[in-house]
Amino acid sequence: MNYRFPYWELEHWLILTLTMFLPIGSILWAKTASAENKDRLGNFLGVMLVLNWIGYQSYRVFSGYWSVQFDLPLELCNWAIFFTAIALWTKKHQVAELAYFWVMSGSIHGVITPDIHEPFPHFTYITFMIGHTGLVWSVLYLVGGLKIQPRKGAVLRAFGYSQIYFAVAITANYFLNSNYGYLREKPVGGSFLDILHPWPYYLLELEFIGILSYTLVYLPFWWIRRTQE
Image 1 (tube, one colour):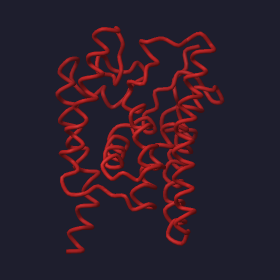
Image 2: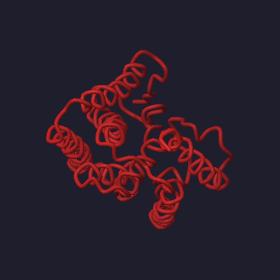
Image 3: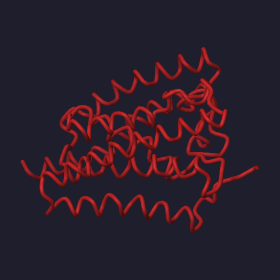
């Protein structure tokens, strides 16, 4: 089946609307919720993300599709899932910072330009959307509901740690003939990478876009601190 996701049609707008209103609703709720209930929602979101990832992995294994070229936890969204869950469970500031930057600069593109190859209600469609919408919901709840927000110097720290992922994914792609992080070729279904130069030049462009994106998503917190000084 040659399926192409219906970009910017009703189905896509519904997903975008849900991705926007879930974090807004939970942040507004957190303003009057008890600390215990706020922690419960954070714990729930972390469990949801991890169980959703396990569900997808299980589907790939039992359907006979699992392979080292596609299913190792080497996508940036995979790392974002684990870091976000750990941040929700432990409230470690540096872990939460990294999760926020990875999701709002990277994983969010999975909602804006989904790379999906099966239509709703296919299991992979559902797990993809739960994973990506859930990540955006979770990190915005981290910074808005639990108030674990990026601190001064967070952009450079996150960019530095991101080079670890960059190196691991490129190395894995070389030895496994894989395309983790889309660092070997652009996604077939189309994405914002299509506006960049061909491989390998777009890898350098991604580095520039990365630090620019980190800076942009950090600006609200910089502005808040500036107005409070």
